[in-house]
Length: 438
Ligand SMILES: Cc1cc2nc3c(=O)[nH]c(=O)nc-3n(C[C@H](O)[C@H](O)[C@H](O)COP(=O)(O)OP(=O)(O)OC[C@H]3O[C@@H](n4cnc5c(N)ncnc54)[C@H](O)[C@@H]3O)c2cc1C
Image 1: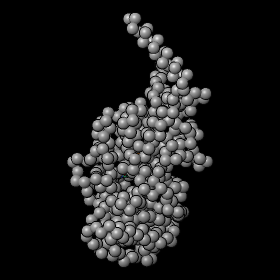
Image 2: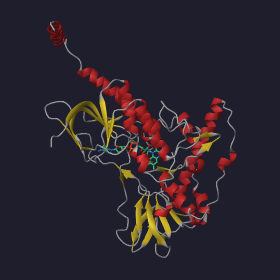
Image 3: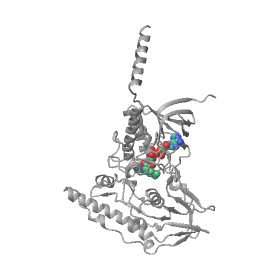
Image 4: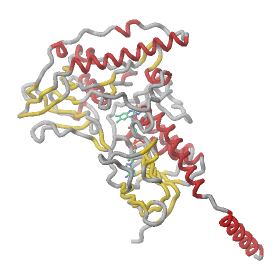
């Protein structure tokens, strides 16, 4: 069998939102490129999330500037399939050069000549540049404390689809970021007894004074924050667009029958132990919530805006029993827990990328996505340039910066000095004369 060998200026790996944004900007700048996607366009939105998931931000916000969700109310939250359709349509709109069903298996820098040799499931490609848009959330992470064997069903939130998937019995959801809290809520609404392990989190109001929190983060400049607040590196954000969107309120969930517990510490002989940090975690989530209300009020006053007051947003429900008397440990069999959903985040996997673009911990070394290996770029990672970088609207702006960097590099490399220009001119005249004879 002969191996297909082609070449391209810029190869983009992955056709999720990041790959599509990259392709749009490269197309606008006239940079020859190809996007390779191992599955389908926006596959993770299509099949990598639970059935009922909707976007966390409203339709007016969670989109690219070049196209609206024309069938949705701007304040509605698009379903995951609608988001996937949106990206497919977006890619069609500018004829993005995407090849689906092709996986990139290896990238190595060429020795003694520019560019990279890229191995794929459909042949070898020579590329001057490689943009890595394989996603911020690739490999589901279950922490090593997870019980090894036994009767329990254990799945990661990446594998969760709907309540019917879990066996009869109570469920422990570990992690209360946007995924964990939404899954726990759905399981409880399906009639399950739910224990939710709540760690440190931010908990912005869904909306305040008639503006969604996405709007507030925008006008307050918070999406543009360039670094995480010190000490908040491991803090998740609990927001939900489910059922039209609502503020995540852990006390309300407890009043509806959910048992909140602290951070999950260990499992021993069927007994799970929790950190005594539940009240603290809730208090810090409240602080975050109230700080946004305060900043919003100050913004309204400073700009003389006429937005309706909302004093009830400051009323907190009293602490439920599970917060005032937290459960230190739980015997899983006694409590009837038959399954655990680990909503404990993801890691990246760059095992196929053999270049000098990683630090000692295997994290990409880059500045706004321009990596330490000339010609390799990363796009779509959390905090790539700012808080908004891994989100739909943010990745589009980061892609513009990377495309601009690529264009600038191409300009340098196309420079010819006087003697090279003369030689080229001479060659062109010779070729023109030669051709004119025919
Ligand atoms: C549960 C959940 C909900 C989210 N909700 C929102 C939201 O509402 N709003 C928002 O703005 N953000 C949201 N995000 C964050 C982010 O927008 C998504 O994670 C989004 O999918 C990231 O897009 P991406 O293009 O960077 O990566 P991905 O969507 O992961 O796309 C990467 C693509 O690369 C392909 N790929 C990987 N490796 C290879 C390879 N070697 N060769 C070829 N192809 C490869 C994959 O198949 C995939 O299609 C959410 C994230 C999660 C986990």
